[in-house]
Length: 367
Ligand code: G6P
Picture 1 (cartoon, helix red, strand yellow):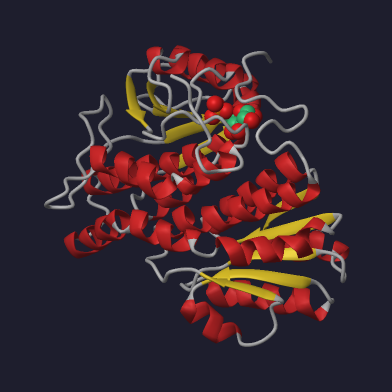
Picture 2 (picture 1 turned 90 degrees about the vertical axis):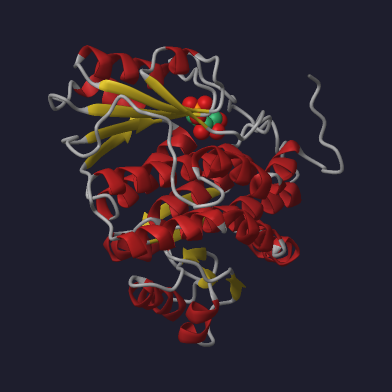
């Protein structure tokens, strides 16, 4: 079928705006709408006894896996090992007996991810995958597939595939947590309720589009941009930096906020915008300290936070975007959206080919 851009100037913008709907579609396949209980299809993996889950993927899908590592370890108490597929496939890593491996891919055709899958299979792992293309080779070679219902993604820079991957991974985390007895009933119910509210909150986040477009003028002039986050916000910082460099060609780096003092702080001056992803929660004060360090060196901070975070930080950040206050568990799904919009508007200001950035391919089927 021919897919159009509709009212949107680019596929990427259309796909960013589809997120409330496709996250909802994906959730409806895994969450019982009445009870709000997680209902995954039967998987060939017993999470109660699984010794470890190995995750591998490339690009944006890898960052979805990195968020899942934080979730699965802290919420489901399941040890996770994760690596980019191009490294993992050659590392000759020993994999545990009775282990399982999970591969994440929008296209289901990425050659490095496929090679990593085949390695894990040779090592006797049960193969799970999260793919957007159910007919793809990665789907066919998996023991079980959890689909993302993102619909066709045309923009080379992944957006809705990422947030639907996170949606599936959040459901998988809650299912694994239940199997492992890692959550009490009240907390489990609170987390799945928070998840079912993500589509409505994602729609609210899109209301900041114009404000983000205005901020993009400040980003478009920069030579370097730094993204910081802690915990599950660290992969969002990495993804934000990836999006910006992919489509605007501005050099950007994502860093674990606490690691800033071990290097990137040397780069900070008036010309370096620093995007800080910091929802309020147990890690907020640590990120707030990083914000102060950046400002003390003349860097301009763009703070992504919620009402509580905004109140606690006071005056100082050059720009603040106030996102809905949510359980920190689901925050990565929402904080992914403003970094997409910021990259998008910056690229438009730069006049680049947003949907077809130079040198990049939608699906990388050669090594
Ligand atoms: C390419 C695309 C990225 C994508 C990566 C992995 O580099 O440009 O947007 O994240 O491949 O693709 P996959 O289809 O495996 O998710």
